[in-house]
Image 1 (cartoon, rainbow, N blue to C red):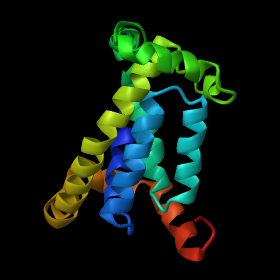
Image 2 (tube, one colour):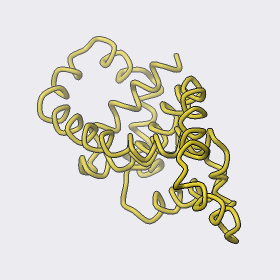
Image 3 (cartoon, one colour):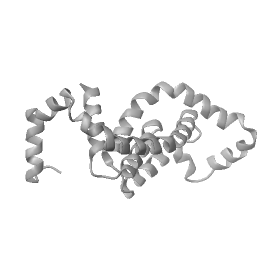
Image 4 (tube, rainbow, N blue to C red):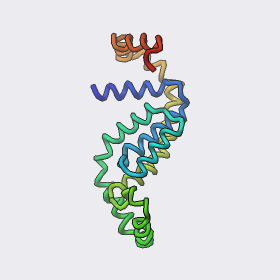
Length: 176
């Protein structure tokens, strides 16, 4: 049931009125939040960006949910990558020491190997996720939406009493 809801939300986000760039931007920011730890300074900065930028909030939460589910699988890799960056690159060691002694930088928790590795992966992954999602939304709206509407499962979900009640309330202005 959980996966069906994610699929339903995914398709809903694709057909909403916001531009493909807004949907892709929201999903990319959600990807960063899902992969890297939220309770750090960089997590707070990403949440501020979500609030300031005109991105699709549903896409943010969907990206956060999807990547949070799979991120823990990659924790050993994140640890290894963070360890390599923090300890094995000689010319960066002095930089890490000075950054640790800076007043605000320790709030990023950068000296944790998993935090360092996951945040680096999240930043690198956000770029292809943005462009891939933008292309996917455009293609879905052009070619797939009319086909998805013909699926039996889509018709069943759309005709359920809960969905009809929600649609009626939304049309009356009761639900945003």
